[in-house]
Amino acid sequence: MTSFGRLTFLTLTCAVGVLWGGTALAANAIPAKKEDARGRIVILGDSLTAGYGLEPQQAYPALLQKRIDDAGLPYEVVNAGISGDTTAGGLRRIDWAMRGGADVLVVALGGNDGLRGVSPKQTEENIRGIVKRAREKNPAIAVVIAGMQMPANLGPQFVEAFSKLFPSLAKETNAALVPFLLEGVGGIAALNQPDRIHPTAEGQRKLADNVWPVLERTLKEQQAKAADPTRSLGG
Image (cartoon, rainbow, N blue to C red; front, side, top):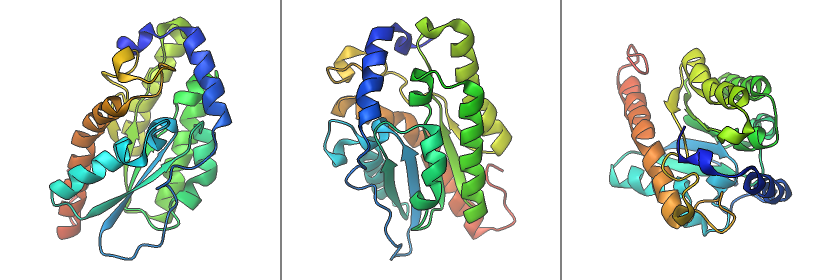
């Protein structure tokens, strides 16, 4: 178990209350019509993705955009994060999130499911539905699933089932996997805001560190696939 397990149940319960009340989109979350030749990366997430309590440019999707630009990769990032969102909410709005087109989908949902006691089986079904719907809209879309973990005091059976669903789904759906979005951030007071669950600007930089290696590899594989249609993603 990572340092995330040191969070108390009281802290998590309070955090759920904060997240449940938030429904506003991040400032840069509204999909727009694609107007250039760049590929589009949609990051479907919750308050971690939206950058709760921070400026939009401090959230990890904006930080990933800078890395993409620095690497000379022709992609734009759309931050489709909504504070308080769950996998059920993500499933309901995936069509909206992709209405401007998407070449890559990052699914960064599930944390609020776990904190609210949603069964891991239901969370798994919802994420599977998100991936299925995204591929119905774009069969060539590349998918990245960002894993989450729950603290030990939610019970060993629940914690284990929850942590296993993300790698299992990634394998089943042929998606790339970020093992734990909050690796090195969850449970570390210095990297979180006073509520102890939403990352600070420095914490968001570490989230970008966790996502970038997987996303960069995915983008390069997708470019190779475009250059050689006989090549399989991940092949």
